[in-house]
Length: 120
Image (cartoon, rainbow, N blue to C red; front, side, top):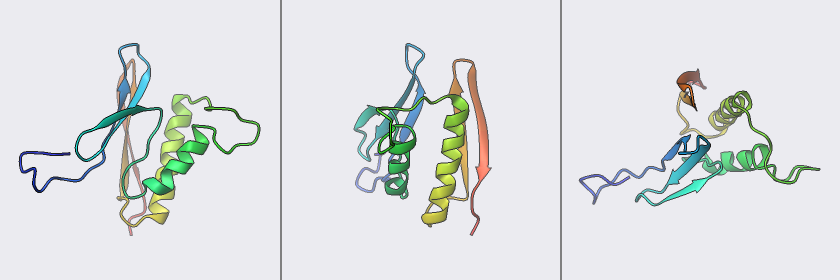
């Protein structure tokens, strides 16, 4: 994301999730210069090459026998998947942090959970 010292920018890949005007969940991924794309799900960061295939499989329903298209995803399953996927990332990627902060956004508001990961 660029800032006032644009010749030495922070190179981050941001993901923004929330509810759209119709109350449906939405995910936007941004590249380092601010271009964005609305997506159904997305992984970013150093472990993204490990995480995206898991999301493709567990949410997108790809490479599953007898499954055509996306799998149903309720709040509990989504939170469980986020936790499992970050545990997998922490096991395989040395740059994944020591904890994951999960913001759960619903029409009733936002709740937060923090889950520690490996601390080595």
